[in-house]
Image 1 (cartoon, each protein chain N blue to C red):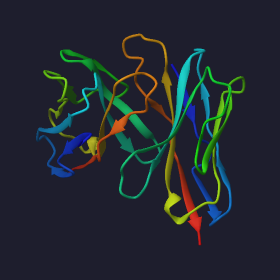
Image 2: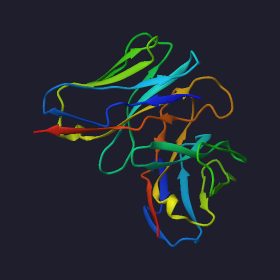
Image 3: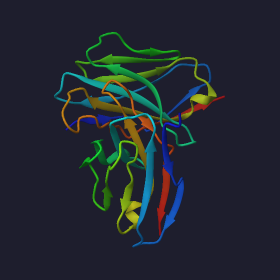
Image 4: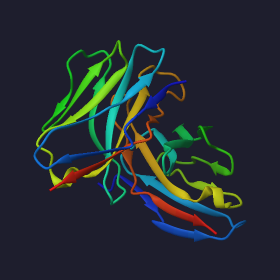
Length: 118
Length: 112
């Protein structure tokens, strides 16, 4: 079974600075997808960024980028130019890419609460 | 395009009561799932479905039932509510394996 670990329960960053959230995972599969979700106080789960394991290039979405290290099974999220609206809970998640029954499920880490300091 | 709609948003139950959490999606997604979110534990999979008439258990299925009679709807039934089922429940759906999920807005359930 796959596991996802987020070792930083809480992080804080000054507004306009850069912060990196860590995520490691354990799997025996070679083909999979990784995601970062944001959960603001509204409770809504918002997809921030996704990475396909077969792609070596790190995914980027505006101020959000990832550092994907497949051999190390590491998937960190970097937020540049932090804004007050970035304050939220951030979850790392894993999904298998093999087309077997039940492999569509997401496995989540326990989350990192990010605080933005004005 | 409504996405994933969950009702109700809040619910208080007494121990032993039963209820159904509703989930509907209008994106023609084959895969739907239910998660519960508890402090310090992330989101854990309760039940999932890969299409109408096909369901299976996730990580924490005890005390919950599901059925999938249509592509659009995937209700979650609590048979006899217990305080341990106090949680936030999310319904989510997806179409293909290279997409992230679309989540509903969640249901905060309190069992007293």
